[in-house]
Every structure is written in structure tokens, then in C-alpha cells.
Length: 346
Image 1 (tube, rainbow, N blue to C red):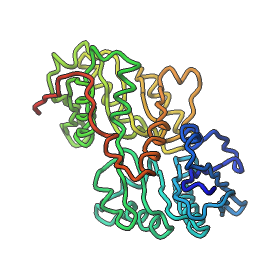
Image 2: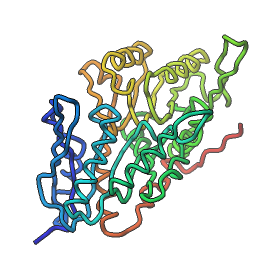
Image 3: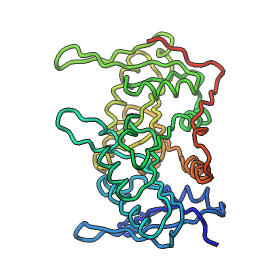
Image 4: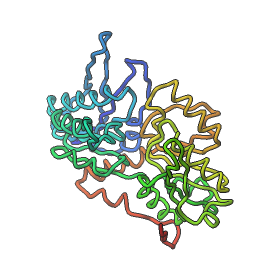
């Protein structure tokens, strides 16, 4: 009997990147579902830098879910998504749903002066390739979904998963949540609400043309001095913002510094710069808790400073519910860990 749904997992063994991949972890949660079939897709790269994908099983009349985190450099990552979708549709797939968990171009969602609008460009490419719907987690700006018209973008959020993990594995009794800037305020406020913790916000004040300082907005005496602080942000790249925030908080008397990060994209995959970023975080004694939407690797020593939250159970549950035609909004309801909601005046 033909199974109506398929889980596509790109395989990169041909270019030396071995699994298991995030898609394999998702499959472990879905493999007992009689309606789903595992469909590996091989990525092959040629010496002239071109490439292709090969689907190894029939997908005719199937509704497909593609799990596509970063394993290769950005331009290739986007091209592979399009190649997979095009091949699936040409092979008779009914629908193609792409889990593009994090995409570096999504933050280029508005023009400043004469700039390219990369988010719109990718949205158009995905639609042209035959992708019916895109799922992504914690994009830098909510307005990115406006770029996706023909293939809708579903914005899923990770504050609940990170908050649940933090409560289970860390002591919150003496913690404060911190937004490293006003751009991260909404995400930090949501996390503070979920944890029932106070919130402070950092603001960079320009003193002169070449000098600035970090101002802390909130009750420093009550919520920073002698307290552990959880910095909440979407992406950690060079770790510059994170370290600047940590130093400002420590100068005001904060104790331990944690960082709850949606996407740990250290220096965008540049191996040498990635090691430098890791070292800066370690030297500043910051504990980073992040999800596995990207695929960095850590030594045993580095794992003391980097705690990775596996979101494959969340992805599998979303796929399972979505495949039944049910609403996925229930995954993002606030489930407060304390009775009191956050109240803050800025």
C-alpha cells in the first residue's frame, strides 16, 4: 500500500559530511507512523563545482516534508532546496513542504539605499521550484513573511522550547532575562513571561563619534546585582553582541551569564572564525543554550560552555499534526512556569 506522506532527508556523504542528520532524528520520532515513508535524497557535487540531487524512492502522489538545515555554504544550501523541490514535483509529488529551519538571507528583508532584497528573491525561487509551504524558526524579523506570497511562510517560534529546557536543566530562582537591544525585545519579553522572570533591556548610547556605552534599562539594584542573567537573542554569529552585553551586565554586578539562542550560526560556517568565536565565548565564561537548527560541532571541553537543545521532537510533532490537517498554533501557546505574568515599565 502506498504511504501518503514522505520525509525527505538530504544525504551529504558524497561530499564527506556524514550523518546522522537532523532529518534522521526527526524520522526516529515518525518511523512508527504508518502513513510516513523515509526518503533519502543524495547530493552529488562535481569537480567543476556544479551538482545535482537524486531521489532514491518514488514520491508519486505523496505529500512531502523536507528537513533542510545548514550543512553546506549558504548559496549551495538554497540551491539544493530548489533542486530537491523541482525533482520531487517532476517525479509526481503532490505537495512539497520545506523545513528551512534557519536561512541567512531571511534577515535581508528590507532595502536600505541600493541593496538587494534577498528574502524576496529566495521566496520567488522557492515558489518557482515548486515548494508549496515553507516552515522556519525565529526569523530575525516577522515582516519576512510578507515576501512569501505564492508559497506561504510559517513562522514557528522557539522561546517555549528554550524556556522549557532551561527550567528543566537550570536553576531559575535567581535569574533575570535580558534583551541585548530593542530589536530583540519581543523575543526576550516572551521568554521572561514564560519563565515568570524580570526583564532588563540594554541600549547603546553614543557619547561621541567614536565612543559609546551600554545603558541598562530596568531595576539594576533589584534585577541585575548579584543575579544570574539570561540573554535572549535569535542568532549568535561572531558573539560580539553577546560578549558586549555580558560585560555590561557583569560591570553592574551580574553573576553567571547565560545565553538562550535560537540559531547558533557561529561566523556563518567559516571554520577559522568559528573557532575564534567559540574561544571568545569560553574566555568570557558565558553558557550558551541553543537549538540544533544549524549543525556546529563541539569538543568535550567546549560542551561545558555550549548546551544544544534537540528540537527534532518538536519538528516531528508539527509534521504529524500538520499532515492530519490540524492547526499547529497550539504549539506556541504560552505555558507559564509561574503564576505571575511579567510586568515591566520602560
